[in-house]
Image (cartoon, rainbow, N blue to C red; front, side, top):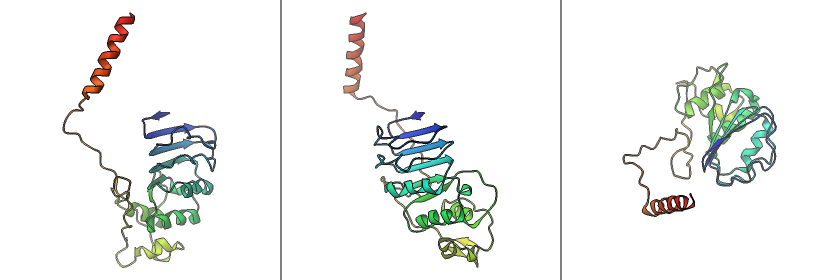
Length: 198
């Protein structure tokens, strides 16, 4: 398990249990890799979560987790593991500006759902055919058959007002981090205390 104050990456060979993250209510980014399913109440305490990645096991019931996480703006999954109805439900969320759907790199075949998500995330889409006849209204309504392209999805804003449809840019600091005088004083005092005990 690797984590900072707002980011956590978890692997579990077992089912992720209910309230598994109740000690981490300020988590903003969570990546779960598991061999079994996720309890429907596993993420109930994560009211500040903005990005959720689920690797490996994903089921339609796992997608109900999104309903309980209104602040999630980015959802990253392997869409090929989902049935067409569930894929369509996710694409509708993207088309309605509810959440950005990002695809984990593990593609076997090109389908309209995958092509639309690639285009939505500013990647060169795979070449899918006949998307104008898709049974998923969100795909059909956002596909231009004459140009064989998809319309750009609406903006989905993160808490810092950046667009979740686009990859978050890395922050580059032009000056070194400065330790505050207060922190320097605390460090100095703790070193003095340690020396005094020795």
